[in-house]
Length: 184
Image (cartoon, rainbow, N blue to C red; front, side):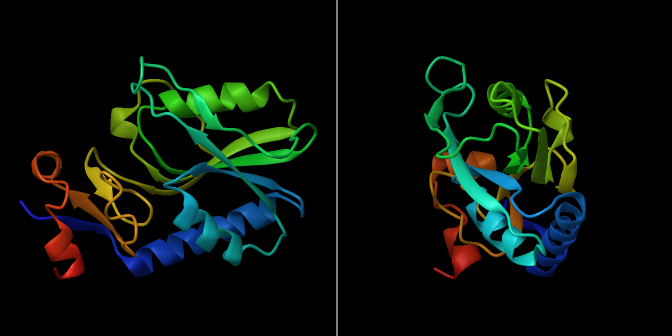
């Protein structure tokens, strides 16, 4: 099986621009955008360039749910205090909702004025816990998404579009789609 384009570069650009306008209409300068490392970095970079307000950007890194004992841990915490501020978590993809639910609880304890989520991709078919997503770029089916920050074993993040990868092929060979995606 080959990788199949889910969202083209043009569609991504239009979706990110739409989200930037929605965020700009909802918030003033000083909005704190908390990007979840590493996958959300391309999305965040393009998103802030479309915004008419001036956001403050910070980063969190978390251990994925299920790795190292089945619970989420913060690997890199925020550098700024979010108390009394409007905060939007920027995620590349939300599927089960478990990691995001943890982050919403963790950041909610820090007394932000508001706390919302902006997700590029919403994979509702895999949702285990209800997770409020105020800003959503695209809803996708239960497929393994690669590109535009999303990776398999640190490969494919730099694609300018999103593809559905063959997870079985990737597990057998993490570079299974490299030739078709990057031309060798």
